[in-house]
Amino acid sequence: MSYLPFTRPSIDEETIRGVAEVLRSGWITSGPQVKAFEAQLSQYVGGRPVRAFNSGTCTMEIGLRIAGVGPGHEVITTPLSWVATSNVIVQVGARPVFVDIDPATRNIDLKRMEAAITPRTRALLPVDLAGLPVDRDRLYQIAHAHRLRVIEDAAQALGSTWGGRRIGSFGDLTSFSFHPNKNVTSIEGGCLVMNDAAEAHLAEQYRLPRPIIDFIRQHHGTTLVEYFFRRAQQNETDETRGEVEEHSYRYPGPKPQSKEAGVLMLADAAESASRTLVDPAPARLESLVHDLAMSRLLDGQFDDCGLTLQELHAVEESLVKSLTAVYHGRVRYPEQRTA
Image (cartoon, rainbow, N blue to C red):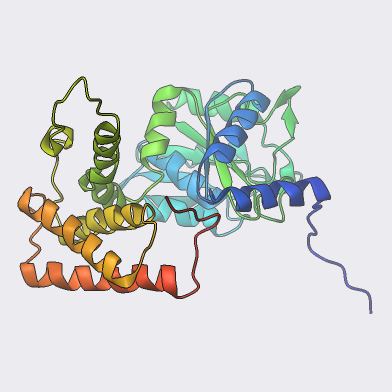
């Protein structure tokens, strides 16, 4: 019995080499490759701003948030789609309003869609089923007449055109997916095409959950400041004879506001500093972590985060164990080098 796959992505040797290069670079989170990908996508859709995310589901949610959709609002969409299309509406606190399809296209029936508009309707979320575009002319006539935002679920429509123009190169917000069963795949992923730099900046803010954003803001970058301080020490000359004072190279704030942020600050400093050790013996690692903890304690960096001395000691012990495992447990960083 022969097997007919639902989808089978085409992955050539050039793609495999590209993935290997990324893995060897050590930069496997969003970085230079993602920026280059966004730039290529932007060029493809006529220069409109594009931001990549972890899925097409995420891009639809971000699109709704950029459009100001929230609790108390309604969003009109089609039931003939993957459940994510309606889930993202619920996720932002709005109510999905389902409109039946046009049997000739399997896309949302635009006449019925306009009839379903109420004072609570905030946006339209049409789906280009199987890559066949919804009638963009009529869609935007309706949207403009009722002053509604449009988030196009074009998950399957990358490469499709309407009136000789590429989907995503015009209109309002367009969401593409890079799931393995789509026209272009990054294994998982998606992108959102927006109207201007202000929306792109807002999308970047939504890239991380709010608690994570707050957490990062509290991590005040002592390691980076300390790096420049050490460099200044090394660059001292006999002519200057001036003593480099550490406090002058301190970042002025904000101090960590939670225990988690305080632990992150110390862990980051310890991990970075340990890489400079010529001989990272356990005793040397213990001394290094303790010195870093004490310098930050005396500098008042833990004043606002609520860490007790007992907790700080426990954190020190945990960091020493972790670093010892890295350097003496056959766990190594890629291309690890010591001073």
